[in-house]
Length: 323
Ligand SMILES: Cc1ncc(C[n+]2csc(CCOP(=O)(O)OP(=O)(O)O)c2C)c(N)n1
Ligand SMILES: [Mg+2]
View 1 (tube, rainbow, N blue to C red):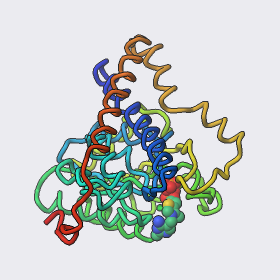
View 2 (view 1 turned 30 degrees about the vertical axis):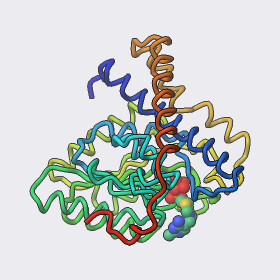
View 3 (view 1 turned 60 degrees about the vertical axis):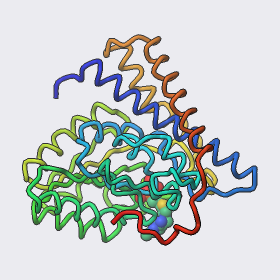
View 4 (view 1 turned 90 degrees about the vertical axis):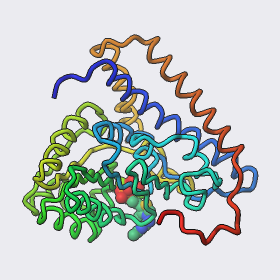
C-alpha cells in the first residue's frame, strides 16, 4: 500500500482525535447528568481503540455497511456520523440518530450505511451476514464490515455467520477488536488460543492479526480484506490487538492492574500516530494543534445542539422509525 498523502494523514488524525474527544465529552456529560439526578443509560467508551475504526472505515464508501457494537461511537464517527445528533441521541433527544429512543448503544443511520450498534454481545454478526448477502444478491460491490469484541468471538453467532459468509463468498469483513477483556474477564480465561484470527482458518478463510493501535497497519490489512470482499472472494477475519484505556463502562469500577494500564498507555494510538506524523509524515506540531482545536469547536457545537434539542414527543412513541 503506498504511503498515505498528507491530506489522508490529516483526515485520519482528525477522525481519531474526534473519537477521543467525543468520548471525553460524552463521559463529562454523563457524570454531570448523574450529579443532576438523571441517568443517561449505558456508556462504553472507545478510548484507546480509535485506530481500528478509523483504519477500516476510512477505506469504505458511504454505501458500504457497518455493523457496530455496544462500544460503537468510534465506528459511527469513522463512518461519517455527525457528533451533534450522536450527542443528542445519548441525551435522549428527538434530534438524535434514533430520535432519542436508543441511546449510546443504538445509534442507527442507514443513510450512512450504519446498521446500528447492539446491546446484545455478538448480535451484530448475523446482521452483517445479511447485509453482505444483500450486497451480493443485488449485484453490487458493496461490503459489510462487522466490528465485534474478543468476548463476542465466543458467541455461536460468530461461527454461524462467518461460516455462511465463507460458504457463499459473501463480501464481509469481520473485525475483532481484541482489547484483552470482555467486561472483567481476561481473554486468556475465555479463549483457548492466543490469536482469535486463527479461527478463520477453520472456515478456509484468511485470518490476520494486526496491531490495533497502529492506524496505518490496520488500514493496510483492511485494504486487502476489502478488495478481496469486493472481488467476490469472501470474508476475512481481522484481529486487531488493542486495549481499552477506560473501565468497561461507567458503572463498573476499574479491575485491571495499574502496571498493565501504564504499559498500554505507552501505546496510546493517538500519541503514536502523532509521533509518526511529526517524524515521518511531514506535518508540523502547530498543524496538529490546529486540528485538535477545530475538533474541540465542533464538539462544543455538538453539545450545544444536543442541549438545545427537544425531548421526543411521547405521543409518537409507537411510530415506526425506519420502514
Ligand atoms: C449476549 C450478551 N451477554 C452478555 C452481555 C453483557 N455484556 C455487555 S458487554 C460485555 C463484554 C463484551 O466483551 P467484548 O465482546 O470483548 O467487547 P468489549 O466490551 O471488550 O468491547 C458483556 C458480557 C450482553 N450485553 N449480551
Ligand atoms: Mg473485549
